[in-house]
Image 1 (cartoon, rainbow, N blue to C red):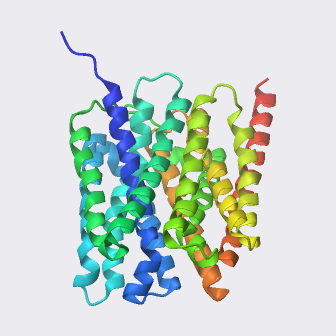
Image 2 (image 1 turned 60 degrees about the vertical axis):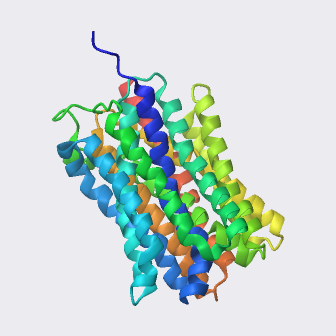
Image 3 (image 1 turned 45 degrees about the horizontal axis):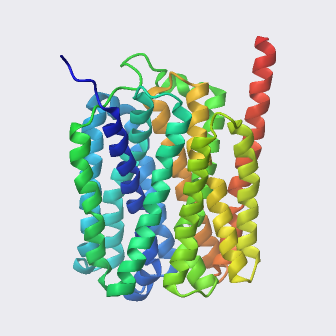
Amino acid sequence: MTAKPNYRRTLRACYLGYVTQAICANFAPLLFLTFQKTYHISLGEIALIPSVFFLTQLLVDFAAAEFVDKIGYRTCVVVSHILSAAGLGLLAFLPDLLPSPFAGILISVMVYAVSSGLIEVLVSPIVEACPFENKESRMSLLHSFYCWGVVAVVLGSTLFFALFGVEHWRILTLLWALVPFCNIFNFLTCPIERLVETGNGLGVKNLLRLPVFWLLILLMACSGAAESAMAQWASAFTEAAMGLPKTLGDLAGPCLFAVFMGLSRVLGAGMSRKLELRRLMLVCGVLCAGGYLLASLTSAPALGVAGCALCGFSVGIMWPGTISISSRICPAGGTAMFAFLALAGDLGGTIGPMSVGLAADLAGSDLKRGLLVAAVFPAVLAAGLAVLNRMTARRRTAEG
């Protein structure tokens, strides 16, 4: 008698997959000012680190639309975790081995960014393909583990720095590399299904012909930009702009941001059947713009931290919410759809932090001015959702 596949093992592996992505995306930003002081790197160069990270993810997302179905989910997701462990390992050594420390940082970031891009493309469709009920709830809860991963990175790193000093960050980097290394074995053994059978999906060309798909791409890009602009700069913002000590700044900035983002996703998972997702996301877009304005226009540290937390709570539903809406509108989108959504999100993740860094540099290293620019992204998302609601209403009228 054949044993029934245990898809909860798959779910646990995917949870750790997002924790791995959280480590890749959020550990280096905790060291931005350390890199600046240790290696004499300007804020403009520092701004390139998250931009290169997300740009590399973007290129992987674009390529993944073609090769993931051919190679297979399992092989790709295992390779992604190998690259993540390798990239973090390189970050611990390469900046000190190369003549240009900045080049060493960028090379390391690019290696684990390939991993992060593959995880972004693969984990959501792997869970979507599992025979679970209430997929929206599962998807929101799944993405909350990215937030809890961020919290773990910030709290764990803060505790390590408090006990051993920030100068030993290389040791901590190797410790974080153990997470993706261990998850390799989870993905080697858990059951994995295909989202759409080969040949039955819409395919890239058909997806790109759908006007509504381009609107979904815009929503995803704005989601990525609104989330990453604050997430990548929260540590430096609370330390440099708000004048808080590094330990308190990391707890009040990126950690609080991630906690509120995770809480919103858990709440979204628990209330997914009661709330109308598009209206909720529209409200969150307005709140997020308000959070950026609060953080950038106030001189009071408490209000600045409150703006950071409000951004975290309001962006929490945007990324998984856009994925859920896309799955409803394009149920036959398959891996190509998830790849392009991830590409759009990472494009936003590239533009958001880069815009903040460049605007801050132009304003004399004023991060408040930089964050003020980021309020545009959630505002555009809210406008895009309003257009999507009108398009859906017209379609229903035409069909009815």
